[in-house]
Length: 94
Image (cartoon, rainbow, N blue to C red; front, side):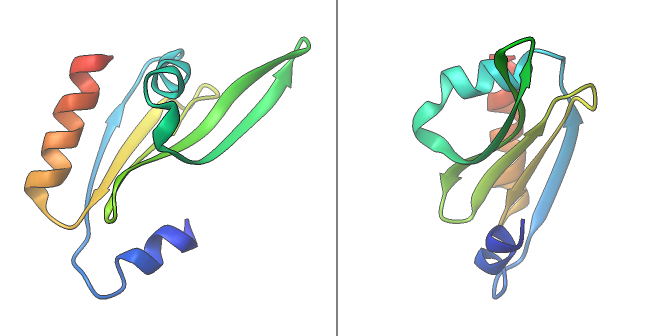
């Protein structure tokens, strides 16, 4: 997360967190493959499973999604409006 924090060093940061379901990290990875900024997967029974996903929607607009039974997402943005808009977009998808 430190490389993301640098992008907000001279700007405000708004964070909006929300719950997601178990398979939502996989859905996000399949829906936004070109936006993957950082990712972590693990092997489960020989298959790779998404655990953590950071998607970049803009220079200062990110979504972090955590699966692995924690099932949590968080938007990082420079304005409340951007954060809430991305949250609504993600919730509509999921």
